[in-house]
Length: 176
Image (cartoon, rainbow, N blue to C red; front, side, top):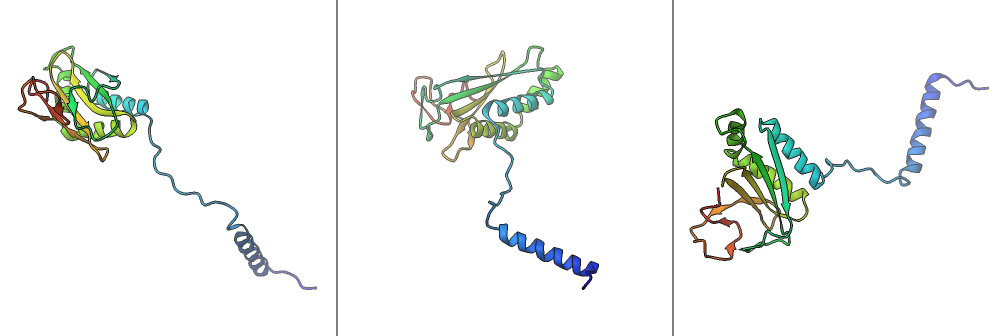
């Protein structure tokens, strides 16, 4: 009778394991590494509003105007039609920490563009993202492009009677 030593047992165990792996290799689908899950629209907006608050803005709100992006505008290269407004509320004055925080955000077009891109990516029908300062005429608008990214509105030299306005252009009284 032959006794198994530890080396023989280890070798036999490895062979059994390799045999099982070979047997079951085609039985189970491979699990692919997943990227970060796509946020829904509400979660995306909530995340951005929280980020704005974390920068020192006391109050910020948003609203969606359904189907209004193409009103008085022409040239939208997508089928998206909603406008999402983000309103930073300055109810205490521009020289306060709240007002300074709002000014700093509005002085950062890359930050605003990043937020606008996140919104149009995750809010299925959003074509325009507008950032407003309450109790003022100040807004910065971002328009979706064919590739799904946004561009900042450019001021036009058109007069107020020129309708419709080309996509991505704003009248001097309304664009930032």
